[in-house]
Image 1: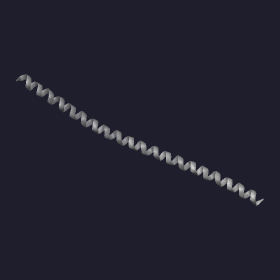
Image 2 (image 1 turned 90 degrees about the vertical axis):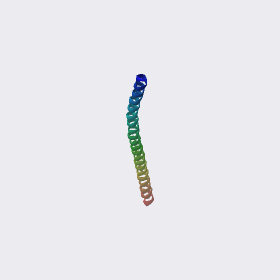
Image 3 (image 1 turned 30 degrees about the vertical axis):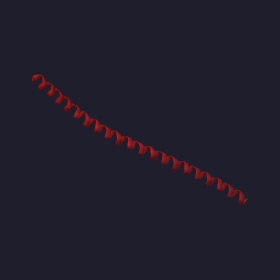
Image 4 (image 1 turned 45 degrees about the horizontal axis):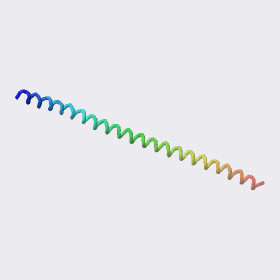
Length: 75
């Protein structure tokens, strides 16, 4: 009977230890997912900013070409 009681006590302690680790793992996974989502959002924002900068450069180059054409036509 003592062996059964001891086995039950050990199992109960093991389950209690696993429960806290499981809660920590769930909490850590939530934090990790939030960080990953933030990193993805930042990466997307950087990509959008680079696209906008590239478009601005293209537009400026087109404006310079148009100005050069206008100057040639005026002559």
